[in-house]
Each structure stands twice: as structure tokens, then as C-alpha cells.
Length: 477
Image 1 (cartoon, one colour):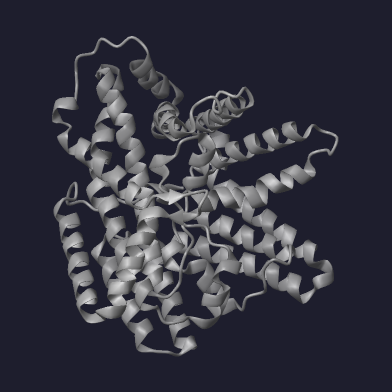
Image 2 (cartoon, helix red, strand yellow):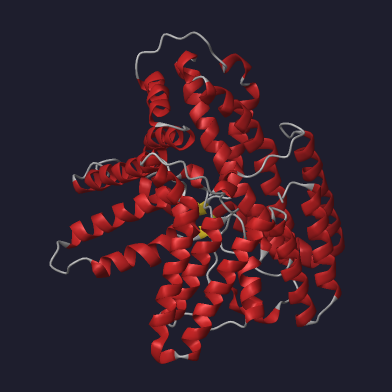
């Protein structure tokens, strides 16, 4: 079920109405769990069956560890191993078998990477005494809560405990913010991502005959497509959660304005990066021999983590090459600082210069992410950076692409997040102004917000790329 489908709208409105109708914890939890199961089961009986197996294995491992605390690791670690093996079999075994000449075909359950990592994280957190044992009802809701179920953000149990044990009413400010996020997500998905997807598909289908400007614009279009698609999904999911009284973690921090590979990693898919840091990078640093040089240990751990992040997106050589490109970008960044190249640039020019320089690796990595094979990547990049005498061009017909690119940067700029100050520069200002108006004139402000939200929804539907409902890119991961 897709957030932009009428079926989801009906399901969510019914869920929200029933949730607000009752104050009983038992009824509210039953409503949310039932709606979440319907939401995921829409993908098919097989997917739902695999999902329930993950839930049972995860909870049973933690429950036994709680029941027999002296043997905690004997239950937690095998549980982690089973979940990791389960992910490996469905996602990576067919690709590995193909390398040896076998044609193993296995279906890939919807959102398997997200809910498996969430389960592994809970097991490890419990073994580290950083989270508590949930009741099975709480765990069902934690694992199946539909605003974050299929494509994240990857939620930690400790961040959900208060909500899971109280199921509170949403606050007025949360409802306003939730509606704003849903509208923003619709704009990103229907107006920006779906239209740019058609342009990018056309460019990537025949790169060998297109001129250089078209290929460059195609790479930019795909990068903004996947940004609008994934961050739009997250916005809509977080908005729905806020209407139910829960605040999910942010997953994107104005990523279009990243000025370095490190900053890009902090801004893009932040919950995955944090998960890999806590459950992969830090354990690797403890495993590596203490006698190794600290810089070497840190660098090796970082590169292994980046490669795993790349392969998490899919089992193919193009994702592996994308991971290598991430490592290379981090390598160049490190030595640029080591040799003082960055420090020699005037402070006022560092961000603009970094933003301009980041354009090249981002465009290259977008080509790697989108292309199906290594030869496809080579053909595309050769057309961009090599000799290109092709005359076929989509640029004269790309007016819709250009204004959507401007809209994407405008939206992300409006939500600009300062990583050092840890605050949204413009959004916080607007939120404070809206909060004051809401407090002094609650009824007119609510009516105006509702009218504006309705207008945004109508405009998003009117400007959508086509009449077909397109799924979200990260559903396949």
C-alpha cells in the first residue's frame, strides 16, 4: 500500500478517527496493530508471513534472555544471527549463487532490510542493557507501526517506549506539524520525484546517443528523484505519526545543501548511518587489534561500514562500486584536510566551494546507483566526461525539469538544518510565528491551515506526473 493511494487515505483516516474516538489503551493499541497489519499485508500473504516470523524470532530471543539473565548472550546472539541469516538468504544468496552459474530465484519481502535491522538493533540494545523488555503487545506495535514500517526511519526501541506505553493524544502543535509534513511529502513525491523519474528513465535508457548536457541533467534529475521520493515518504510517514501523537526521528537534514562527503553522510538517511555506526563501526573498532595505528583502525572501520551501507541497498556490482566511490570521496576529503587545502580557503567561501565541488561526486554516484550494470555506468560516464559528439538532446524539452529542480532546492532550503547549531534555521522561525498565531487565534489559524493543506493536496494531484500510482524507490531495499 502506497501513501499516495486512495486505499491508504481511507485506512489512515479510519485509523485516526477510531484512535481519537477512544481513550482506552487496549483499544488504541488494537486499532494501531490491526491497521498496521492491514497496511503491510496489502503487499501479500507471503510478505506478511515472513514479517511475522521476524517478529516472533526477535521477541522470543529477548524474552528468553530476560527469563534466563545468566544465559542472556546464549539467546540474544543466536537471535541476531538468525535475523542476519534471514536477510542474507532473501537478499544476497540469489546474487551470490548467480556468480557461480546458478539461477536461484527468491522473492524479496517488502521492506525486509528496514524491519530486520530494527529487530537486530532491539536485540543488541537489550543485550547492552540500553533498553527494556517490552510486552508482546508493545513489541508488535513497535515492529509494525505503519508510518515507519516499510522504508523507515529505522526507529530504536528506547525512542518509542514512552509512546508505546501511553499511546497519548496528539497535541495541537503536533497535528499542525504533521499536516505540514504530509503536504511537503506529497509535493516531493507527486510533483517532483514522479516527474523527474520519467525524465531520468528516458535519459538512462539510451545514454550512448545523448549529448553531454542531457546526460548531466539526467544524473541530476535522478538524484533529485530519489531524494524527493525517499525524503517525501519519510515526511509523510512522520506526519502521519505526529497525527497519532508520536514523533519519529528525522531521516533527512536538508541533504541537497551538503558541502562535503562527511556532511552528506550526516544528512542523508541519518537513521541508517546511526544504526551502522552503533552496531557495525563501533564493534569493529573494539574487534580490531589494539596495536594497530588508531588512524588506520578508524579508516578501515569506516570503509568497511560504507561498503556495507552500499550493499545494504542491494546485491549487485553497481552498489558495490557506489560504496567504493563513497570510500574514495571520504579518502579525498581526509587528505584535503590533512594537507591544509580546505583550511587555506577563506571561511566565507568554504561552504559555497564545497557545495560546488560535491556536485561532481554526487552526479557520478547517482549514475552508479541508477545504472543496472558496470558497462552501463561506463557508457554513461564516458558520455559525460569523455569525448561526446552526439547531437540528440532533451534540453529544449526540459522546462518542467528545471522548475522542479528549483522547487526541490527551495523546499530543502526552507527546511535547512544547521548541523553545528542543531536547529532548523527557517523552519524554527516559522514554527514560532505559527505557534503564537495558533495560541492567540486558534480557530481562524486552524481553518487557514486546513484550507492551505487542502490546496496543496489538490495542486499535488493536479501536477502529478501521470495517473499511475508509482511505488517508492526504497520499497525495494
